[in-house]
Image 1 (tube, rainbow, N blue to C red):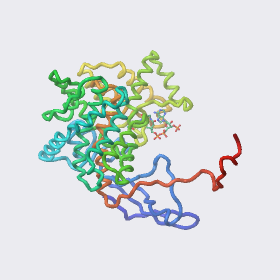
Image 2 (cartoon, protein in one colour):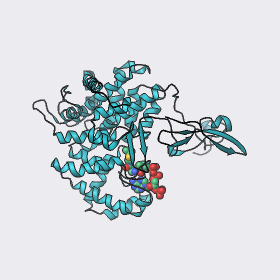
Image 3 (cartoon, rainbow, N blue to C red):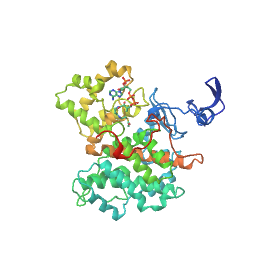
Image 4 (cartoon, rainbow, N blue to C red):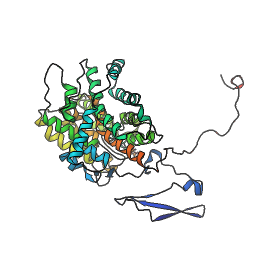
Length: 432
Ligand code: ACO
């Protein structure tokens, strides 16, 4: 639901221009500047898109001041507590909670597509065993387009690609881990659900039965749901931008994985663990650490704190914190790094530097601790984020692709380089 009746008037050089005002379904307002250059010769500049909406979207609503996050209208707290990753993914992808039959069909589709082409198994031999799993994941997902060339046609069966991607990503992630520890691959098992299957592929061995801990499966389920979508973040914007050139969904998602990898985005979950360990190894020198992260010249930040959109507590971090507090002890997983994280959080929340800048824990502050308790190795934390974020990336790609008004993404710039000058042959140039 978008209202476009109002306008705003902009006065430039004494001339007035009327620009449409758009109002979203939750009352957010935006000035549509699409025709500004044509009418005034001006562009707008907004480094890092801090104040620019790149699209209309009906998938996720986020209010960073109030700490609200909803997928398709449903509060994240309800979904994390009551839904499953597969069901919530269906909701995000297709807009409505599935009926029993729709859910059963979706599950079956995922099961049918979980195997990798046998040739792709050889790819794993080509990577160094200690290569970062995010580099391997991005390469493997990009390679899927070579196995499914129909995906190069933007009008091909998107839902089929979605099912393939969603089930194959967990197989690829688990195979990559098995290869890194020198164990045989565990093939997916049709009778298991998404989480059980993933744990079995990660931690099972062919010679023995494997029963994942139901609490661990429930924790993984909630973790994945919390990560499904987060509107136009860095990786999702990347997926949309790549997809806007009509690149395949596999190529677009592979680019999203690379964008997620950076420590300022999804890579923060791994960086948080390094930080907590550093504090532990310094004998708990919180003060010294806090001084460093507040000193801009140190180039350091309190990882897992701060967010472009949330200016209050990230609701996902709230859920994760409760989960880490309650669920982990039940799993027999006490972790001294959790105590350090809690202590650090308390110190930061009382520190005027963080208070004045509205810096609160984000989703990555507690997710690493939880993954650790589930036995996931640290270099796979951002891979886990990718597994969770995948349905969101695909829903955003699909939404864009189905919108007949979508155009290729291509920002403008303000040029600040040299003025026109004449070419000088190398022998005639001054200097050594
Ligand atoms: N530690 C110390 N200072 C911080 C932090 C932090 N974690 N985050 C922001 N600040 C400070 C900045 O130095 C800046 O201070 P100033 O106003 O005195 O210059 C102010 O707070 C605003 O920060 P910006 O960098 O302008 O905020 P931006 O929206 O560009 O960045 C970001 C958001 C990248 C998440 C930032 O908060 C950060 O680097 N956090 C640490 C990394 C992290 O946890 N990333 C995961 C984010 S969640 C996700 O992507 C899944």
